[in-house]
Length: 96
Image (tube, rainbow, N blue to C red; front, side, top):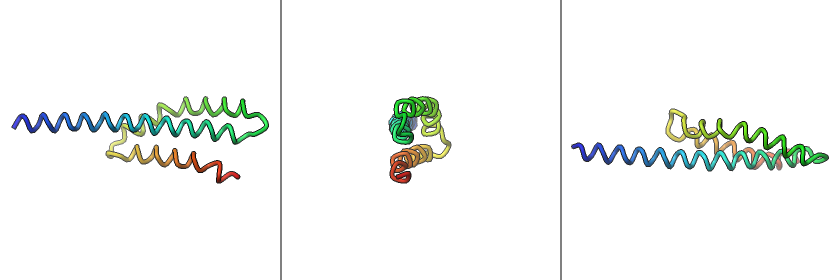
């Protein structure tokens, strides 16, 4: 009986590591898309718009990682971060 419990615990640990890696990757992609959106947002001064986007992305990145990994329901955070990334990817097409 103890072997079954040990296998279940290691599988749970591996699942948490995979979820954490996925949350980090999705959060990074969403932050990168936010920066690129800000650079297209204010065309007369693209360097300043990019700097503002970088500040916002750096501030939001830890929050997105925690939301992606730490939600109570199993994959709700990953879906939330994926939706945010999709919205950030589609935002320039909505504005133009």
